Amino acid sequence: MRLWLTAEAVSAADGARVGIWPDQSGRNNEAVQTNMSQKPLYVAGQLNDRPVLRFSHVETRFLKLPDVMPRLQPRPSSS
Amino acid sequence: MIVYDHALNIAEREAVGTYLGGKYALFAAPSAVSGLSATALNQSQVNLVWTPSNRPDQVVYEVQRKTGAGSFAKIGETTGSGFTDSGLNAGTAYTCRVRMRAMSGTGAYSAEATVSTLSGPRRRYPPRACACG
Image (cartoon, rainbow over all chains, first blue to last red; front, side):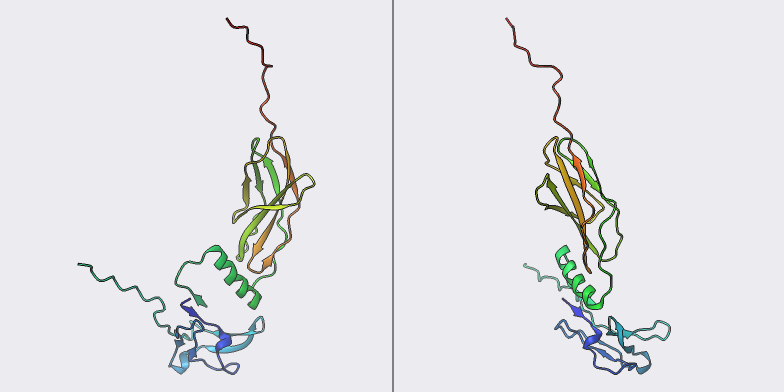
């Protein structure tokens, strides 16, 4: 597993903006956004009574991910 | 959102889907498979077809069969809406049923369908004693 993002791992109040979405995979690939106006919203009780993060294309709310699938380095030449 | 570093096999997809489907109640449990019909193809094969569900959380269909008053046993799985059962005995009645396994649970069995394989080849004439030579 390279990445596991679940809104249940976010500690925020209902309606709050979220700048860091912690990665539950153990690889520390958290998704981040430093621009306050572009941070997604934490909304409680939305999916089977569980929280979600609400993104918006119109309002340009998004988080940035690191490269969770870095390409393998080529093997050194044997010669 | 979960990202893996390899393509998940069927068992892994089912495990992840069952976990997420149950946790977030994404889909209702599947209903029983409908429209099952069975047709004998020859002396050793039977073809089963049923109405496809087109559920997004479908994993696989489980096919079971029995003979006579015996017990049902699983004979195979398929992701399609048909199955060919092979290696059967000629002139024998088989009863089949199908159920769907989905990420949100396992559906009830379909109505049973019974079909008989075709009988063995008929002799065209009785053997005769050879009066050669």
